[in-house]
Image 1 (tube, helix red, strand yellow):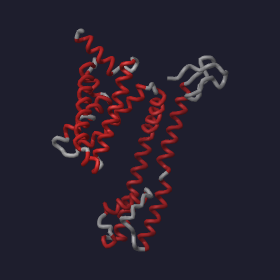
Image 2: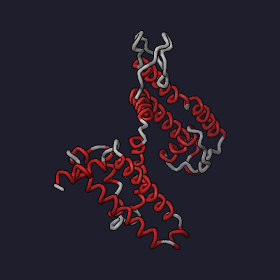
Image 3: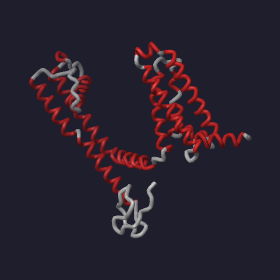
Image 4: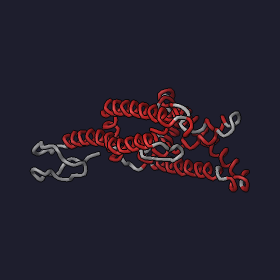
Length: 272
């Protein structure tokens, strides 16, 4: 077998999803990723780590070495290794193996291996769930279209929590736990988001009045980003429906799962 044929075979198995071998490889890969994540989670439990430390340690290294070999094979078999290395999955594949090697110098770095879970996104390719990817793209476009409005909203909220934080600092002061303006801003953020940890509490009447205003304001603004994203999402879904057109009457506006035209009853083209 020539080197070229070997590279093609490896490429077909590792990158291909239309072949039986490629699908089986991706399924085994996903199971290996989930198994390695299970080892990582169990190693964070103290009594399990103390009892099975050797097994967890060797298991983590076995999976890391396997993923390292897999990454090198991807680089070797890819027609454009640099393009793969710079791609989304290429970067994630590299980051998924680096923490174990970094842990040799930085204790605890191996817990960053949790990022391996992102590699499970390959399940969408393996199972041909293209529609799910299309729906996620619609959501992503809606978020991108909303980014300026959301930026303005968060800027306004930041100004509000800064004002309320400074106000409560002046009213309550260090004697009641508000030792600085940043500490008071933290209280304002916790209050305006209605989390309410209770570690900082105003004691004066005026301070409680400011806290009441902050909480009421928090309830009133929580729905703002939801409304912004919902409006953009509605526009994206409307635009997506317009793309699904009947081949017979050219009428658009069909749902993504529609089988027949709502105008003439003709069968719609299959949606990928």
